[in-house]
Amino acid sequence: MSSRIVFGRHFYATRHKARLLRNAAVMLLVEDEGPLILDFSGVEAVTVAFADELVVSLVVDYGPRIVLTGMSNEVAETVRTTLARRSDLGA
Image 1 (tube, rainbow, N blue to C red):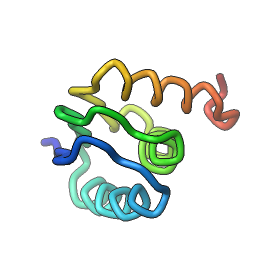
Image 2: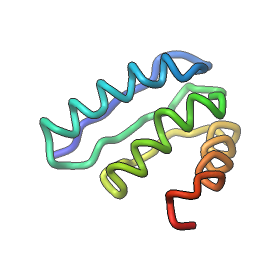
Image 3: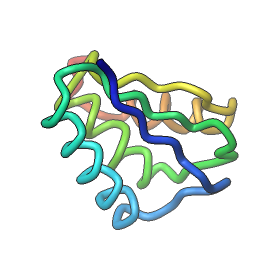
């Protein structure tokens, strides 16, 4: 079984907002052993700080259980750039 978080706004910024969403994501990951789908459909942009605090930290901690979907080109590029900057991913 999988859980899903669907983002309902067009732009996400700040580590604080990402931390709140990350806490909700971790609760879902603890309750369900399946993957967690982060659905970015409709999101036009995220900041590097937001991507690092939410997406990258979840990927570092939960690896393949995190599934990203619905990302615009801009969101995908921000996430890729942020992932590439992290030395703890072994890349």
